[in-house]
Every structure is written in C-alpha cells, then in structure tokens.
Length: 196
Image (cartoon, rainbow, N blue to C red; front, side, top):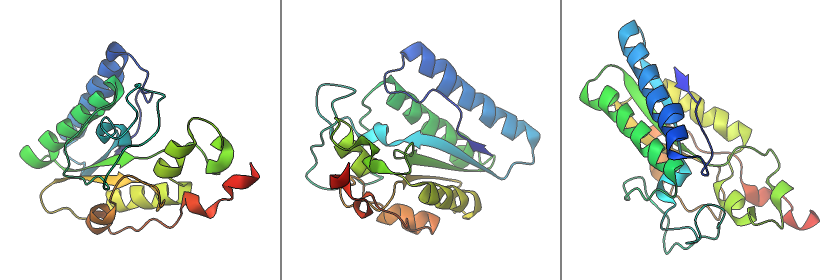
C-alpha cells in the first residue's frame, strides 16, 4: 500500500490536517492490519517536519534557509506548521504499526517538492531557493517509491528522505540511499535558471 492522500498545504488548519492526515492515515493502517495480507505500507511524510529551525522565521511563505550543516534523519523534528506536525504524527503511527506492533513493514518518506518537472518555473520568485533545495524529479520520485515498496527492512520501520541530488539541499541523503538502495539521478542544478 502506498498512502499519499491527505491535506498537503503548510497553510492548512489544525482541523483540516487532523482529519485529512492523522485520522485518515490511522484508518489506512488499521485497514491494512485487519486485512492480514499487507506486507508493506509506504507513507507520505514531508520535508517540513524538520524545516522549523532552518527556514526563515516569518512562518510559511518565508523560504530562505539557515543551516550550518545538512540535516540528518536522526536530527530532531522541528515542524514549521500544523501540516508538518500532522506528518510527524503520521510517522509515529507508522512506527507503531510497523516496529512496535510488527503488523507489516512501514516506510515513511520525507518528500521534497515534486510539483514541477522543470524547477526553473519558479525562478525569480520567493520559492526559488526552496524549490532548488527540495526539488524531487518524477524519475527520482518513482525510484524512491519503488525502493520503499521493495526494500526489505530489518526492524519493520524506517524514515527516509526523498529529494533529488540538488547541491543546495539541506538534507544529508546518504543514509536514505543506504536504507533504500536508491540513489537519485536528477538535480535542480542541471537546469538553466538564468534563462527564465
């Protein structure tokens, strides 16, 4: 099962993400458990779960980065919104069903920004730096999703980053590559940002 449905906006209200992300994910996990046939569940998490201390302090929409070193999977979560907080809860639900209860394996992917095939569509906007760092190409999304579905897990649960190999990314993807066995093939660096 690959569960991607939910409320995906950092501007969403608490009530929206509670219903659309937390409750909906628990329903999916419980249905998978009751089926007795599901071996793996892949959950959509988000880069926003760790962006709280690395983004501008103006809240959502303030997208400049402040990092001294790349963030690691084991670094503390720092949600930047109710949306991000809901995805932390989604990750913990996955851990409960996958690692604690051992119902099936669970992979939570902290997904970058995958709305644009050509990341330069946002060149010159307030979102440019964010998109350069968080861009996830369709090819890399497919690679990470397939790896998450097929990779055998040792302890029933992992979290991994799913971003392309962008030079400005704020996440260290080495551990994710090791855990999933997939190396991203694309980079926002390969696009000519000056032509837009």
